[in-house]
Length: 166
Image (cartoon, rainbow, N blue to C red; front, side):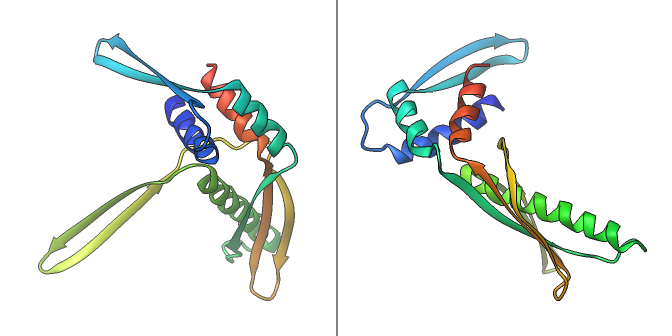
């Protein structure tokens, strides 16, 4: 899991610095385990590149928007709105995670008696830190809860460093 986070963050950062030479290095080790050999890759970025990114990203933010409908599931309207608010926040967090990571899709198609059914599943693994809610509102007309969140871009570097040093 640590490798997956580091891999996604390295890809994001390396695309920004394609012109830089040898900014990313990879160290691969194979550990013996009872189940067989396990390969572990550690990715590292030059300190100069990290310093440049920190100063560039110091006052920049990643933003995302999320929304969820208010469903009349419970008799208390306030409870329904709170559930919609939570759904909107989760939607915004997933949208933000998609901006800084990648999505793994699994698709299955089944055919029986010339009838098909499709099943598509998506999965994303990432870490978000210091996420702040900018907009938190209920749209009475459309019965939708809407939020906008932001996270400092520099947190991407800090998350990378945390997972790389574990």
